[in-house]
Image (cartoon, rainbow, N blue to C red; front, side, top):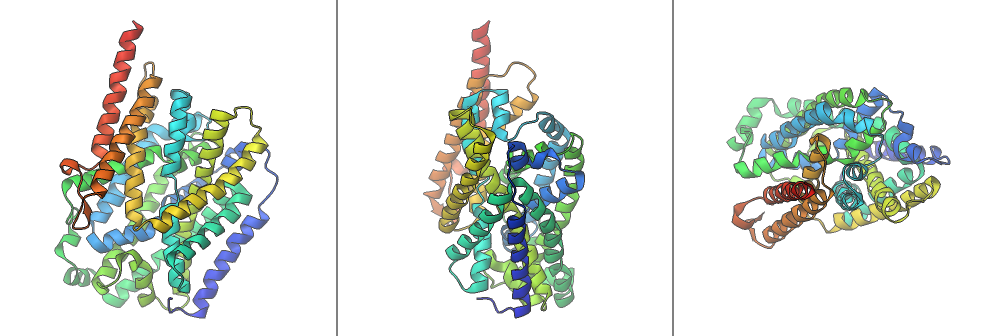
Amino acid sequence: MLNISSIDYSIIIIYFVVLVGIGYFIKHKFTETSDYFLAGRRLTLPIFVATLVSTWYGGTMGVVELSFNYGLVNWLTQGFFWYLSYLFFAFFLAKKVRQSELFTVPDQLEKFYDKRSRFLGGIFSFLMVTPAPYILSLGIIFSLFFGWPVWAGATLSAFITIFYTYRGGFRADVITDVIQFFLMFIGVGLLVPFAIVKFGGLSFLQTNLPTTHFSLTGEWTTQMILVWGFIAFWTLLDPSFYQRCYATKNDKIPKKGILISILFWIIFDIFTTTIGMYARAAMPGLNPATALPMFAIAVLPKVFLGLFFIGLIASILSTIDSFTMLGAMNLSHDLYKKIFKPDLSEEKEIKLTRYGIIFTAGISLIIAIFAKSIISIWYTIGTIGISAMLVPLLFGFFYKRKLCANASFYSMIFGSLTAIGWLIYGYANIVDGWASYLWGIEPMYPGLIISFFVYVGIMIYQNKKSF
């Protein structure tokens, strides 16, 4: 249990009371899915930026864990590669996504191909938006606060999310995201100047950190670094990006909003990388997984510590609520309605989505309880989801000739199965704490290669057959 003051606990409790209050007071009778799923497609530019930035940065503790262990390689793999993918989305996809007037990524796959691709896309999208890593992060924080086991803290975080997302839908999600946008920057940002004043500047870091911490590649192999470059393609598939683009007032907002968001992400990445390196330099004996909160306790005075914790919690909770909502939409909209019950009314679809919120949070809670690392969850679900969906989705957006439904369906199956097989082999052969993959090749490479060649091969075969 953390040794923090009653003032700091009070600040944290007030924050949660406000969140629960938003969930309680915002509820009204939703009759249209566009209102419950997309807030009526009325997001303005400032709201779009606030909800996108806060939703996308839920892995604060995991990123600090990386910078604690490896230094600047964190900025390269969790920052720079992602900025490139954001730019690609902004310039080449954002406008197209908004103009499609759809709801989800599987909607997009059905538009390009058929219901089979939608069905698989619904499954893989559900996997990619599991809030498990973020529930685990919050569970760790609550366990530190109250001296509980991690599973109890994770359960509390799931219940809080269910309450206000169930009642208010995407509208409640957006309102809380805007609040959490400001809290995360103020709270987490506070730690940087306090650390510099307490310990000193760059010379302190250079004296107390391994030289590899100042290298962009660190101790990592080129292949390990590049695979995180491919994981950054997650952006091109990410349901939260699509949902927020679908929800804007017009098709100009997404591009402008993403470009502005990149500036905020760069600032926050500077915060987290700096904090992780200071924590390692000042307190090398810390558990990397809890380095962020423990370092904050050692550095920040009363009140500021409370503000830090609500900022940290806000950065995580803003992602949990968004991903829980998206997972529920995958179940109700993409799988049940579109595949099994096309005549389902909008009111019943909303009701089913609310049940889906409970189910998604429950499944994610189970994953979080049994998972050992936030980073390992990201890596696993990112590898499988990207291997399955990246190739057919990009062909759908950019290939100008007739698309092939069979190519999409089978590339998703074989790409994902290849990645899963490679992951299983690696996890079954652990050497010095690292998965030892077949031929030393990271699983995303064969997954994407198989997906691409299956797609192209079937498309060529089908085109020849049609002549």
